[in-house]
Image (cartoon, rainbow, N blue to C red):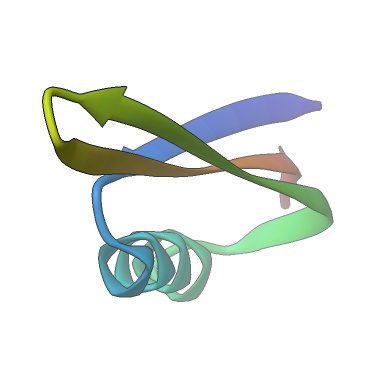
Length: 58
């Protein structure tokens, strides 16, 4: 089993990265874990969208 981790500032970018990884290779996807983190930087909210894909190569 292998793991690929993605980290993006926008949810659409994360979606694009994960879809590109899944569609671009011949993998058996075991699971996908998703997380959102929010922090405050000055008066600005900073979001971090991340995903971890567990997979096996065919």
